[in-house]
Amino acid sequence: MKNRKDTQWADGETAHEGRLGVIDIGSNSIRLVVYDGIKRVPLPLFNEKIFCSLAKGLTLTGRLNPEGVKLVEASMKRFLALVHVMDVVELQILATAAVRDAMDGAAFVESLERKYRVNITVVSGKKEAQLAAGGIFSSIYKPQGLAGDLGGGSIELVGIEKNGIFEQATIPIGPLRLLDAGKGNTAKIAKIIEEAFSAEIWLEKVHPQSFYAIGGSFRALAHIHMHKEKYPLDIVHHYTVKTGPMRVFLKEIIHSPVQQLKKMPGASSERVDSLIPAALVMDRILDITQPVDVVFSASGIREGYLYEKLAPFLRNEDPLIASCTDLASQHGRASGYARELFTWMSPLFEQENDANRRLRFAVCILSEIAWRIHPDYRSEWAFFRVIQSTLAGLSHFERVTLAMALYHRYQFKLKLKSSVVSLVKEKEKLFARLIGTAAHLAFLLSGGHTGNLKHVTLSHKKGNIEVTFGPEAEDLLSDSVRKRINGLNEVFELFNKQNR
Image (cartoon, rainbow, N blue to C red; front, side, top):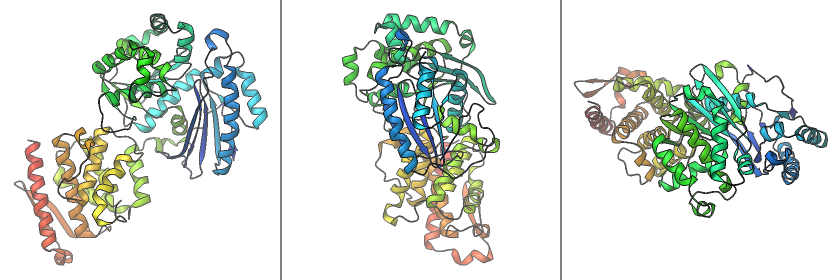
């Protein structure tokens, strides 16, 4: 196992297949995540978190929580044993706000390094903000806005734009510190937050499209909001709420007694004390910056660390296409077929925008993922495989649209009973159905193999689809193919009516 003390952070490394582990010693918890490799969208193979509350009491004593120190020491022993048995080839251990700010933080790190013979990188506030931004770039397509990574001891704020980051700050107002400093008094905590943000004058000039909320306490708020709204898709990453409704919800949290918060569906017992401070922090950020919406992110500094290790050309890959390619390699057939299928059906989508184009290409990549499944179950299996997979770079409604297209690749009519379908409108449903139906027809004509579609041309004239068979493909025409062409015509007509 390789373990490095990275004071100069790696840049420009290429992807490799060896497993990589990251131990994150945070202010509120210690976590081990083992990834399948360094690549554009790494897959977490193992993820375990233990609450240690290192920052508890830090504001009052200046020292790490003694009980938390014991928990971290015990957790390190287990995590390092896991790293060994999981054949991890590279391990990075990061420590953040509580450790870097505590007067006994350096001694704590030295003790762990000596006891376990490891190297630990204490991340600066500036670097932590950069890694948080990297986490957003790693899993959200072309993000623009303001990211806030709320840990137990601090919040890192970083402005995100097309070409990188434009401003950043680290502010020591994590929930654990706020609870200590405010002694549980909501009004006092709110005043501390207001004074802390008043020093960040640059925030008043930032009016982002989105506020990207990172960190366990923010995700805890998302879980409660999802339950409250009876949201049908239980995935926090990229859960999006307009700023107005979000602020109404935050005020409800802020003014709720802790005992009432404990009873709220979706509330975590380990996070319940942090909910009000976290809600106060987010509400103040939204009040100052007035973003259009709040986008919750499950990606943070660990993913940002891996993202920084990638070569620039890998960072520039579309995370959706990269993660779909990875998924297809586990279940699909020949990789060259996807691009051929994409080009073949393109005449049906002459007016599509960039967002739909990348989504359609993603469908083409995944079009054969269910070929090993029993025919009676392929449509629903493909649908839920997409819904439940760790795909990156797509919103929730794009995820459902993608899943519906894969459903229609195997099933012409929609017979699916799933509440997540409510997340997409009729226009997206028809878009998905048209892609899936075209992919089904293509399979009947090619068998899913590269090189066969060039013998059949797909076009349309006056709203009617025309399929032209070359001499090599004339024998492919059959009643089942005619039926699928008629079905494609039916969907194409509905799709065009919807888009007029």
